[in-house]
Image (cartoon, rainbow, N blue to C red):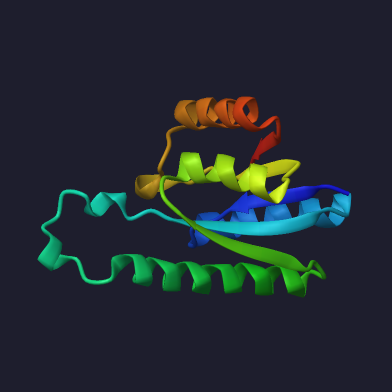
Length: 140
């Protein structure tokens, strides 16, 4: 039995990715972990008095998104675990995959203006993840 690590950030694109990870976990009989990475690095150039408790807010948002993903999995008969990490997505995915013993990483293909990667960058990122972790990366 393997372990699927599914990176999620919420929204319609993430729901599609979560459904794919849930289906894969059911088909393979694998464990499933949803990961939310809270990255507040966008605040590095903002004056300190303006920043309230953004990391705390990001954590709360992440916990909410993860609870929705966990509920979606439970409705499909899959017992999913959740994890939150802090920092840059690329670094945290590698660390989480190693720490959790993931055998597969599932990443979505975000669409539209909020996409973090274009298709070429996403493919390169997936190959880099595979090289650094030795773990299968599936783009859904």
